[in-house]
Length: 88
Image 1 (spheres, rainbow, N blue to C red):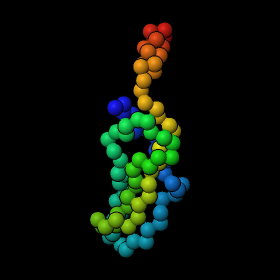
Image 2: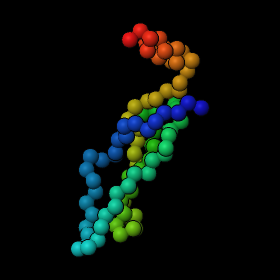
Image 3: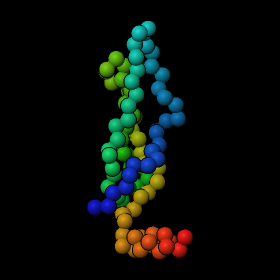
């Protein structure tokens, strides 16, 4: 299978959520993403999520979506890349 490194991702909202906290509480934000996605990958496909935790307890999460299509690598694509490399 062809694979593509995870590139640009889009969040579903423009702003982070507001979390009411007591003094001394801490928020951890982490992204859950695969090491690689197997092509083809389509724009809008869910590829992970952002998780917000308050003192170790998950309080909010939202999905991450792929921003552009990535097709499978084909023999034609490989030949085109090779020719372009030698012509530069």
